[in-house]
Amino acid sequence: SPPSTALAMLLIAALVGAMLWVRRRRPVMALGLAWFLAAQLLTATIIPLELVYEHRNYLASLGLCLVLADGLLLGPQTQKLQRIGMSAAALLLALYAGLTALRAQERSSPLRFSLTEAAKHPQSPRATYDVARNFIILSDYRPDSPFVQQADTALRQAMSAPNARPLPEMAAIMLATRTGRPIEHDWWTGLQHKLRTRPIGPAETSALA
Image: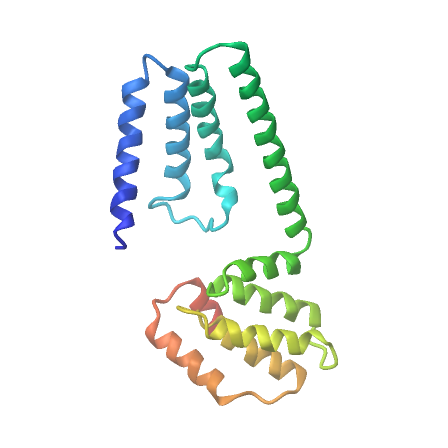
């Protein structure tokens, strides 16, 4: 659940079958498929790694490049097609360089990165809470800091995100306490409700501590 999970499992099985089928005739292609699947085994199966961003696929994508490169060698070797292939490779390289530059710009500061991630995933408990956390850090718990109000707004959004953890309520209570503002009763009840109803993990333990 959802049904796309079954389709994904069939596709993975097909990739494993293709790897075994071409391993003698196209060893580079088989290596690329094996490279991709091996990287996914490390980061996207039962091993409990906290890797939620796209950089966990950087190493895996090298395997796809090997598959693509070896596949291009199967095409006709006319001069015209070679020029088309080189032009396509240059455009792809330019695309990758541009996307890398944009991503580097997004990651140039913790606040900018958290804001861009929250804009892309406004219902993500992790992304919305990270925005609030960065505003709190910038406020340095000073009551006159302009970041206090921004942190408060971000915390309220993080509290209401689907499957939100108790961390936003905990942070709101601490921020109000250290800046001399009133603590809302809903923060305590929300914190208690989430601790009662959610599985206890690192976030819940941290919030309780």
